[in-house]
Amino acid sequence: MGPTEGYEKDVGSKTTHRILYPESAVDVDDSTHLVLLPFKITDMRWLISVFTTKHITHTYINVRPTINANRDKVMIIHPEFIKYVYESWLQKHGRYPSTGFITLIFALHICDQVDVFGFGAKGDGNWHHYFDKSLTQFSRGPHGGDFENETMNELLLALQRESSKVNYTDVVDTLFSLFPDKEHYSDAGPDRCRTCAVVGNSGNLLRSHYGPLIDLHDFVIRQAVFCLKSMTMYTTKNDR
Image (tube, rainbow, N blue to C red; front, side):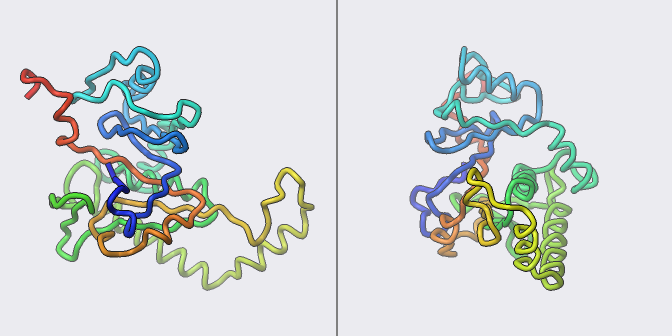
């Protein structure tokens, strides 16, 4: 679930947006945006149920019928955005994009500056969550993880090349000199941008001491993680 308690030095304590879907659902505090990734129609029906009848307890596995969340801070990523990420960014590699990759592209669309923490595997291709020790191969599974990893690396290199060619401050200074500031947007300006930290769940966060740096960002976006162990309390003997 990407916990922060007990890991504050490495992952920070601030969360402004929590990306999740029914099978990875967790409680979020009153100040955090619950951001639903609807991979299927049942996911949207589940969200309705969470805040009303609480009757949906099963998708393809048992799920939480309700969670603690601020109804006024619920956001839903349009399924067309998931399709766009899959077709335009991943070129249809894998069956569907991972939560982490969708979160990264989502951040690129809503933020002026994006810093990424907690993505990537060890040198042998195995990776684990910072909060457990189970190993997996990112190149296997339904997400086309190897292509996602290559795409993220290529994006980073492309951004580094562009930043060496263009003086960002000069461009923004010119832009804001053309348009007078309005009182409603008094916090806008060439020295102000929306900074976002996208925090993954990779074990490479351990002992990184990135926590204070992560918490300095305006938005801190985390993903809840599908975990069968977390669903045990919602299963019956007949379900096992």
